[in-house]
Image (cartoon, rainbow, N blue to C red; front, side, top):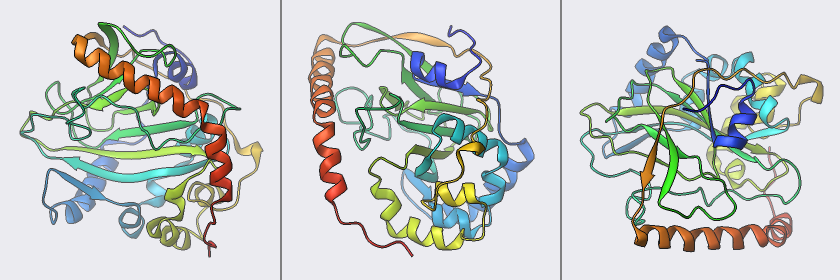
Length: 295
């Protein structure tokens, strides 16, 4: 069992994941799902999306970005901007993870799109998951490895945490930690609201994509804090709130990997370390990349 801690950031640093108290009521989650149904039921395939622009057009900005959520995000990263902001749904009756299913690690992966700075806080890329459906022990629950980043994640036994919970369950995870969504064997789709944040100082191509550019225009009359999250001007440092308290422990179990899988993991971790060593030069190149004017 993972011990309780009063600061989510401490849990993220020591375990890669932190459960936080629910941010929204059951009634709010139900009302959101009714709106999301109008978009998701029109899509086909194993993975369906409600993107950031859809969410804004549904009029949900204020109900999602409550003062409590803003406090949480800015307490973790004071100059936070969004990298991900969408809802996605995974169909039931699946036998493999919906991400990196063919990577010979049963879907376990690190997010390679995270670009890091060699200075500052080590936790620079954080995702918040809010379950919008009940997620059972066979319903595609999220998993995060407890293995430390250095030395490489190598060995027969790694502790990993299984995030099982009802609709409304909220948790944070460090995107650099090994993680995956387990296969959704159940007959019920798994639905999640996902927000990822990083420092505005780091390269963030998502903020320049057409959807975020359109969203920035639509949230122009929102609070300063919301505008910052979507790439607007920075808010005052005085806004940063105290960290929220993390609550229940997370159940864990040992994950067994074959020698071949351990070899694959070792090779990938060596590559991960090489990416870290080259981070400074990549950041320099990113700064030289022309960026379109934001209107």
